[in-house]
Structure formats: structure tokens, C-alpha cells
Amino acid sequence: MGPSVILRAPAKLNLTLEILNRRDDGYHNLRSVMVPVSLFDEIELGGTDSAELDAENLVSKALRALGVPAGQQRAALRKAIPVGAGLGGGSSDAAAILLAAMDGAFGSLGDRDFLALARGLGSDVPFFLTGTAALVEGTGERVTALGSVPPWQATIVKPPLHISTALAYAALDARTLESRPRNTSPTLQMGEALQRGDFEAVGTLLGNDFQAPVAAQHREIGVALDALRKWSSAPAILTGSGSCVFTLWKEKPPKAELELPAGFERFDVSFISSPRWRSEA
Image (cartoon, rainbow, N blue to C red):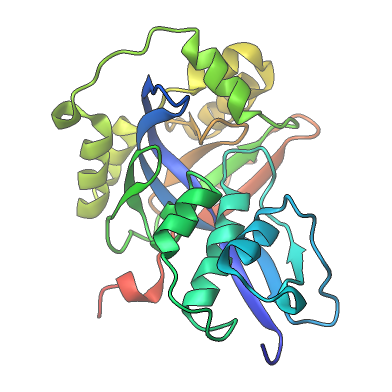
């Protein structure tokens, strides 16, 4: 594989997350606008400190799914994205391996259906292949890139807890899921507002179906949301199934100090998109 290669895997935020229904196979149909942000895991391939990762780690699973020779299935994973936080770190790590393979990092691996591999690794992995914000539908397999994103910022707060996605879905299944036609979906409206660069409209459309049931089970979620709203007077919302919450900024966060209880973490990030989506100046 040659010299060591450093891969950067970004976190994501869900600007919207609609859970539509539970399918016969146990999965849920959803609609979401997701955007990658500047909080990164790093994966070093071929470095001297590379080691064999746990077999259940998504980096290991991606390497095996690609058919990378055993001698090259060693990597150093440096985590910066919190786990169990709704930021998609594991899925992004897997996507980074797939993208590296597309760029020839592992040499010739023969024909590969990278989208099918991504779907098999996890519902958020296809999104991370786009390199920009996207409308995500189905169980995560239908991804429509939304082009270059505005250089907006976000402040993320992570309470001191991990959220089980399976338990979050169980809490949601205990409620009645409303039928929401696609043509009136706030997620589609969010995608259009983001493409227009309409910051005010994006703020009014923020929403997450997990927020109410997850916050009801974990008071720390409400504490984090209240802290952000008190600090900024701007909307704050859960990302994914939690535990992280966030608020958005068109430019910079306020200078006033954000007061958080002990154990709560803060991350200041920006929206990002890969160079192929950026407009030529």
C-alpha cells in the first residue's frame, strides 16, 4: 500500500429527521437532511503504529467487505467524534475506507459495488460517500446530494451519556407515527432552504422525531437543549438518536460564555463539503 495514508472522517448533523413507519423487516423508513461538519476521526493506514482493530469495528468490517488482503487490514483509528452521540462517527469511518479504496489506496481490488457495500455496513454509510449535505430517504440507502453547503457554523453539546439507537427506536415505536406525505415534508423544504442558503428558513424547519421520546427518558438531553437556548435564543435540536444537541450560526457564536454542567462537552464546528461540490469563484 506504500507510505502511510491519513484519512479524515467527518461527523454529521441531522437538520431534520422524520421517522415514517416500521417496515416488515424491522427497519424504519425515514427522511432526513444531513450535513457533514468539521469534527473528524482520523484513520492511519500503513503507519508504524497501525494495529489490528477489533473485528466489530466498522473500519475492520469495511476492510473485510472490500476484500482487502489480510496483510493490509491494519489501521490506527484516532477517535475525536463521540460514540453513541448521533454524530455518525462509526459510519463515517467505514465510508472513509470505501472512499480510500475508490481512490486506489489498496491497489486493484477488482470490480466493487461501493454503494451496495456501504448499505451493508450501516444505514448512514451511503450518506458519507457523498461528501456534502444530502437528502436521505428509505432506510438510508436513497441519498440525493444537495451540492455545496453554506459556510455556516454549529455549536454541539454532548451530555455525559450514550444513547442506544435500538432503544431510541423502541421508545419511538411506542408512540403513534403520523403519516406524512412526501410533497409536504419539512425535510424536503429543508433541503430547498439549504440549497438557497436561507438561514432563517433552515432555523424554522429544524426537527427530529427522536427528540421528544429520548428527552423524556434522559433528563440530560433537556438540560443540554435548555443551556443552548438560554445562551443563544436560537433553536436547538437533537441530532440522530442523540445524545448530542446543537444550534446553528450564520457567522460566529455569541461571545457570552455557554454555561454547562460538569461532564458536558462542547464542540464548535462548521458545515463542510468536499472540493468537488464547491462553487468555482
